[in-house]
Image 1 (tube, rainbow, N blue to C red):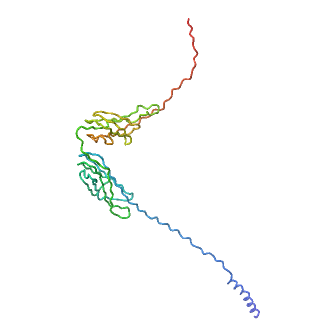
Image 2: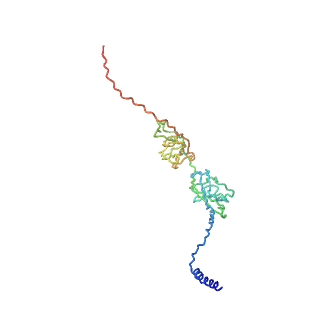
Image 3: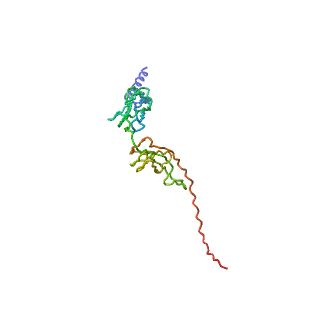
Length: 292
């Protein structure tokens, strides 16, 4: 019994250092597992369109005489994705000479389709511009609010109708010029021949301008009553429009008949010419004729 007790005491003495060693022995830290966060998709913000509106005013003429009629056209362009219902269109005349057309002003209510053309009559002389103002309620997906947009035309001049003997310049014809193409080559003067005639009762004593397709101009020094002349405009083929007195230098009895249009077909080139071969050189011996 004593031996068993002694054995237990000895075993305890041997185990005590091991217990103490466990208390002081460093422990290696084990890293904690971290959870990878789940990516949350970023919401794409909805972008509202930006509102804009552009008005444009054009006229059928810029120079008229008293009693003639003018057409004024208003058009409107708005930003994609936006709406702009119109509630009012106001057409007014601006300038020191205003008004020179009747009616003096025009106000239209809805519905107002675009483009919108309004006709007025020249009643007195002077120079003005037309102002077209559009009033509506814009909306681009955010909120509604009222909006004005406007534009001005080019200056419009009204004069008294001429009296007495005056020239009247017209484009009487436009013909093809240049002859027939030869050997896959157009002639150097290929183009349009523009015929200008004075059908008025007086001579056009000063120089005036002939314009073709808005790009080429030539000057005529003058034209007697009943006289006709022609000018060649090189390279002008296809649709050709010529205007007599294009810069309004001559007072005419009729200012509305200066323009003329036609279509000149572009000639088809023939195939390249085949050169005529040059015969090879041949040497002939002299021939002696003996008289009998």
